Image 1 (cartoon, rainbow, N blue to C red):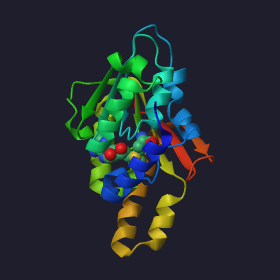
Image 2: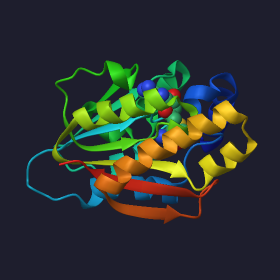
Image 3: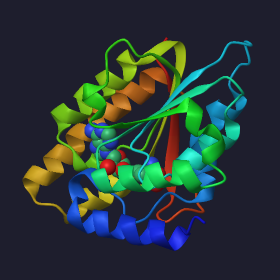
Length: 216
Ligand SMILES: C[S@@+](CC[C@H](N)C(=O)[O-])C[C@H]1O[C@@H](n2cnc3c(N)ncnc32)[C@H](O)[C@@H]1O
């Protein structure tokens, strides 16, 4: 039986233990997970099986929404850096009635997105990466890597908490403020060119923007 409280407990512990890569105090709520998976649910049905990648699935809050939207022959890859989250996901894929039905079509990769084999291309990528915790160079690098893994016409959906960079910048010293301004510049330049849709999700703690991006 899957317990949401166990997920919250694991998340909180990992937030304190690995703040830099976890970047959130709790798993995403259902409305956020639904918005992030918009293009898994409503993507063009060409009749061909799709390859879907989730980056940073954590305890699987968004993975469940992806699993519910998978079409019969679709394949799902999950790439997760954190060993405790990987352990939790492995258990849920084996036991959770919402994930077990897609376990045979799901590959759980324990590692860094940047080490994913270059020849894997996806029709939809859903990312939970906490970009605001990273250096400007790393954000640029991760965006390049995400872009390289998209198949032609593929969609990237990711979220960020509303006004969080401005709020963090307000509380930061000069170097931190500069880093956050750099991230703002990199993300907004990319979004100005490639964003095709944006959803505002107020019923989430904290409220979030979901960005949907198409590079080609
Ligand atoms: C903000 S949490 C999102 C968790 C989950 N998607 C959710 O919405 O509840 C960020 C996740 O990204 C993972 N992560 C951070 N950097 C990563 C990387 N370079 N490669 C793969 N996963 C990464 C963290 O371990 C964590 O699970």
